Length: 353
Image (cartoon, rainbow, N blue to C red):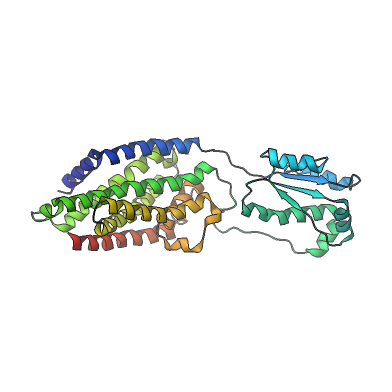
């Protein structure tokens, strides 16, 4: 009986021209965007430097020349032009003769940094490291006296911030979550339509029982949610990373979204309400995945959104080859949140039926 209901729901879903068109076009569009995004990563940033003192220490100039990320310019104007007109540099510094002499004598001084247009705020944090390098190059003994403590960094687990990732890799978790969310909103529309037309009540007055009805809707939701994302991970080749772990993550995440679809269908009076509540839920659930693409957006409150653990697990598995132990916390919380959403959504939906 469940198989018959699922087949009916899938047919009704694709008979709807809107959902059928959106499903097909979205799959093609998402894949096109994925493959058009840049694959290469930027492992370094360029720094433009101008030394105003023509008689600056030859050793200092030699040290700057040995650093591949540093470029010396003969004039300040050329340095500024390179910052404005090219993408090779993100920050520039013109070191006055008086400043270099002051640092050499161990005195304090002020240096100005010039940033290229559209440099993100978090990138400007490296300015301090640039100053330390220059101070060390000009007067190593001075820096040794001022900062005798050497810093050593240890990264526990996968270095999610330090390891460079391409835009394409960061986009994939957001893409998969968006596809799951979009397809399951169609489930909410199907349920509301059956309630409006009286089909749901007619089915439940016969031999069909509510648990069987809800189980069929869960299977339908999983088919709709996982159908496209499985195609995407197959086409992109990501399925080979860790097939069982990846499919388990997608399954648990899809259960969570199906539960949300039940809840949305229960509180919606018509298709317009489904679209309104569904869009609000979609925006909220996509924010944690968006912070993967833009790490500067990450905030502690995002851990209160269940989709955070779905996106985080996908990010770790797809981009860092994480194992079961690495994502055990994410999967455990998803395994609890998914069934809880189904129970709550099913209970609210039952009262309407």
